[in-house]
Amino acid sequence: MGLAALSLVNIAHRDKAAAGAIADGGGCHLLVSALFGLAGDDGDVRAAHAAGAWALGALAPLDGLREDGATVRLAAAVKHADAAALLDEVAARFPKSPAARNAALARTQLQAAFDRADDDARRDGAAAPEDPRGCVVT
Image: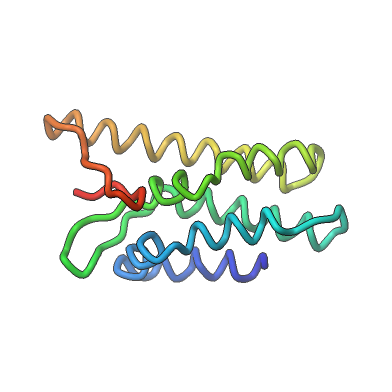
């Protein structure tokens, strides 16, 4: 699970079109729901949650491209996938582990990505439209 999360980030960082596909195709939803489904408190579960939280934070600031050329902001897809609830749960379940630190960092990165999008929209003179799937497009 942790390796799948990290490979999502690697793909998105290398290729803007792939980042757009991750947002449009529900990659963030898949990651969040898989992490919600992991039960237990063993080292593998904690490691998967740590990697997943890190991945969600790393995806949040990225932008991708759709086939039609529209820019997709992954922060909206991460938020739409209910990542905030997952990050809160990770911090509560594993308060003294790297997973909790990664969840807090991911929250910060997600908020910073939204602040950046708000700043961009103000600079451009209008709010960025939100796509029905939860991805901000410009």
